[in-house]
Amino acid sequence: MLVFRGLLLILAVALAGCVSTPNGSGAPRERITLVLVCDVYKMEEEKGRGGLARIAAALKAEKARHGNVLIAHAGDTLSPSLMSGFDQGAHIVDLFNMTPLDIFVPGNHEFDFGPHVFRKRMSEFKAAVLAANLRSEAGAALPGIADTRIVALGPIKVGVIGLTADDSPVTSKPGRLRFADSLATAEREAAQLRKAGAELIVLVPHAGRDLDEQLFASGVADVILSGHDHDLYMRFNEKTAIVEAGSDGMAVVAMDIDLDVKIGADGKRDVKWWPRFRFVDTADVTPDAAVAVRVASYAAKLDAELGAPIGKTATELDSRNAAVRGGEAAIGNLFADAVREATKADVAILNGGGFRGGKIYPAGSTLSGKDIKTELPFVNKAYVLEVTGAQLLEALEAGFTGAENEVGRFPQVSGMKIKADLTRPKGRRVVSLQVGTNPVDPKRTYKLATNDYLAGGGDGYAVLKSAKVLVGDDGELVDSIVIDYIRAKQTVSPAIEGRIVVARARPAQ
Image (cartoon, rainbow, N blue to C red; front, side):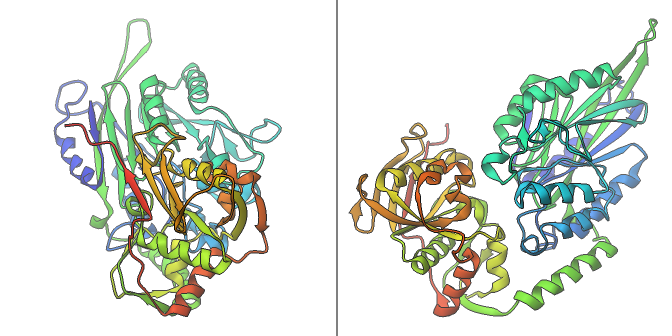
């Protein structure tokens, strides 16, 4: 059993030369290739890696290797990005339509602009859109979105199942669309595909690692091409293979499958297969010229609109997931302070998953409106809620649920100090909470500033749905508040100052 994580996964390409072929002859009888991209939010490359122009080139190169190639996108791409705040993801569909993408499976962020925009964007993809566990409010399949597809690749029929993120009602805004259980759906669809003649089952889910493990352990599929966790991942137990392709096209994952197809005396076909894994670093790919031109045209529009400086940071800001979803972050303090000050609230909570820049701004960096809108692409409004101390504690407990896995609900705060212990059971992880200079009073009411997503119960903050709304849809946009805050101060110097202290389990020795 093989498990790899992190960018060093690219080194796993060495495995390709170490795997035997099914017939032991040194050369495969037949070969097909499955290619995966997922969680692509940024259209532009960063430090010579990722971006749609490099992704397009990598996918075209894979398609050109031989005729039996299937390319899948495992979801999360319409949002969040700076440009999506203006066009609700239309540019991403346009750019992916310039690639040889075969299958698209929606992730949770495809629903960020609501069910109407979701349906519109899915209809615009040239690729086949699959989501077997998605239904309308009435329980019907959605027009233009199929459950499965059987594709003839070389000598075999490949059955492909798409599974959208079944937790989208918690993590996004799908309205009244229905989401069935992923594992049960996969089991049903796989059985039907095999009856229809599929000889290899490929599952394309947008699923967190826990669900990935359930799907893998079930043996429901031969190959799983997953998205959602933003890491490079590979596992193979000689029965099922699973891969994930990180995020933003930093790498493209290809699985070359060697096939040995034999026909028995009874006329039945026996298919044996073995995977060869390749992780293609897009830093080694020459960007596709046509896509690069299209990306540049979109970027020029954004720069003209938002590129002007608004101020400087005297201290380093880190918006990478490990920072904003793993503990107190200076950029989290900066943004939460801006929202609390603008709303005159007692405390503020922003979710770490709302920070999307994924970069480091060195001390002394000039900040622009584009930087802030890149960090906060969701177009959230600042709400002010009246909460009791008990509700505030419950909200923070929600924020620390799953925090050992760098989840998006992790809180970035202002006006309070928190000690949390992730070794304790969920719901009992907040060890102490101080508001201002005093311990929280469970019966006292406080003014809490947050974004409309959390105020509506998003990311598991269900307790906030019952809070009294003091400022709602008439509130300012969070990104505008932060921009005005930095512009007014000209120079900001946020630091990690002990607002959030987290105890974690020690790694096993």
